[in-house]
Image (cartoon, rainbow, N blue to C red):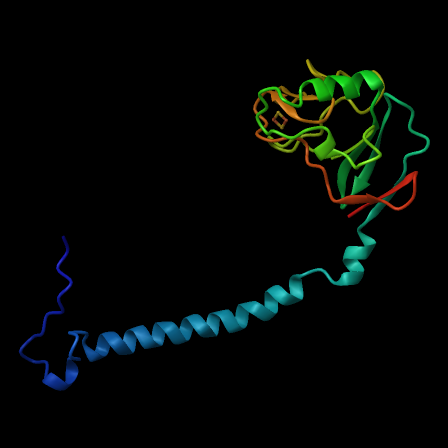
Length: 192
Ligand code: FES
């Protein structure tokens, strides 16, 4: 074990050494470092505070989507905070497939109900960003491959997402992200 005892050299006077063995210079060094640390915090905080987006900027970065025109089995691609957003109306078959697998062995366990809003279980809202390295998965546009689980497929490294946007196969670690959103009417969602 390391020897933590302070060594006192013959040149040092008793006044240089505190009763607990910490030399005065050590204490001054520690005090100077602490002051620098506090000063650093004081300088950094206003910078961070200035960098935080204002309420106006945040409000402007919400996205509204009218889901009334989306037919069962169709998705639309929108943009939310400069990133792709998928809004999909699930078919009864897709809902049944997702619910059937709610209790399957899932890498990132979540039920379909947990990923949708009550009363709107057929509307799935996810970011269109693969959780592996950020590619845009296929499956939202008509004719695109949907992968082995019928949801989305990321062609970059082969991640397969199911009809609830849950990761089922491939390197992606987590489900497609469901952003914060709410229904502002029966047919309109506001994301963000
Ligand atoms: Fe999607 Fe790698 S970025 S699988």
